Length: 337
Image 1: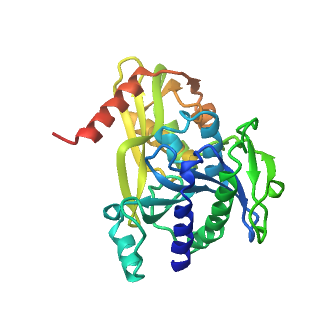
Image 2 (image 1 turned 120 degrees about the vertical axis):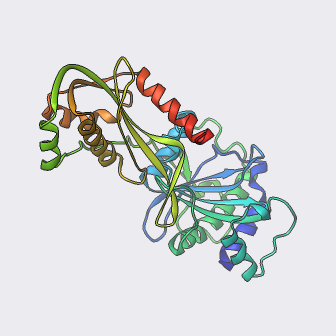
Image 3 (image 1 turned 90 degrees about the vertical axis):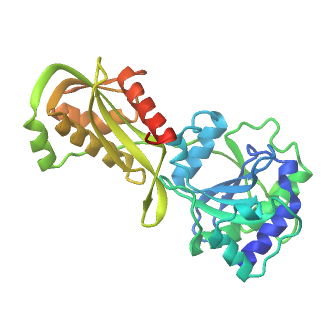
């Protein structure tokens, strides 16, 4: 922790947000595992000051998609897929008591006042920000000094990204040279976000038996969706995570047929598929058509719907689902009564 605090103090002293923005992305290669990570500096908007290190396929995809379309990943579905480590400078009263206790035990006192207290956070898909563990602390100890070296280089090369497409990223050398970085040290690589793919949901024999016993209503059409629920978090093993709500609504009249609430940390395929089974069983019938407003659901549910002879129809807007979600969102924001 002392080494990490020293590295953070050096990074903060450079104030890279004064000449860098969050679209100035650098690439890092883990010297031990070869893992690719991407890092960006926060603070150019003068709101949040620090750095974010994006990791693994989900984190890299989120950042690369955001660079191309900032609005695409601004919703909860996008945010809940983020995988990163963040170093942020906050006010002392914004630190959780656990962080503040650790800093006091180390007799750490940052220079200056205001947004000068370091906070380290781990973000994983489905989970809200949490404390870092030993492995993550070691990753930051490797990555943060390299970022600081890059920011020092960037200060004198503010045109580094001029005439470069957003998909082209400068990767830092591995290992880093024992001198200030130079332009020849950077390796420019084109990076494109890998598409998010989903396997088909495979219902178990018991689930299929339950479904086949339901009354068949060929002319009926149901609306089905599975989304992160705004304003709803739950504690799982003492750690807060997002929750996902799956809704089955009768098309046309908006009558609620069933719902399922689950942890957003459960893989989307399993969550969406199992919830459809549950809500169909609760409704007591099998429709001729199920309409969906999320294209991710099509590859997940197509095989199950084929088995049940149900037409799965994508639709851009579903009034019943929209009304049900709006009602839930309003309830979560205002609370009962």
